[in-house]
Length: 179
Image (tube, rainbow, N blue to C red):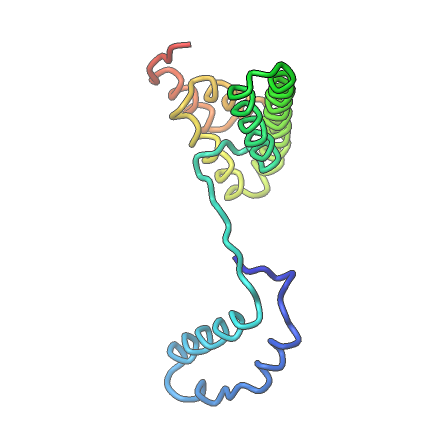
């Protein structure tokens, strides 16, 4: 991922200004375009640093970095508490466990509240973004019937759309999950 905050745009402008672009005038437009893109990206790579980004496709959409950080902290404290068996370590673990659970609960609630408002706005204005969000919601349905029913409630609360029929169909044909 390009890290534009640490980019040296003055240097990039200087390099672009001093680069010989005459090679673009030979050949057809398609080859000139691909040569330009290749040359420009190589120049940009010298002045704009990149950083690695971890994509977690299996995470819930509301599971954010703060929850992940606190969960790791909770797990480390639990490991310490099991080794030492001290009461204060167990108390610290219980506090962190409750904090993580509350963070998950509030984050999930905020996510669904945002989805409700977003879907009601996007239904008429931006169908592409609307279906992108629906796809995110539907991605979760293979794992839990509870998620389907929650998504169904959110989707049908603000509109009557063919997706509601599909979700109803999915809830009726999916096998029952043990509780």
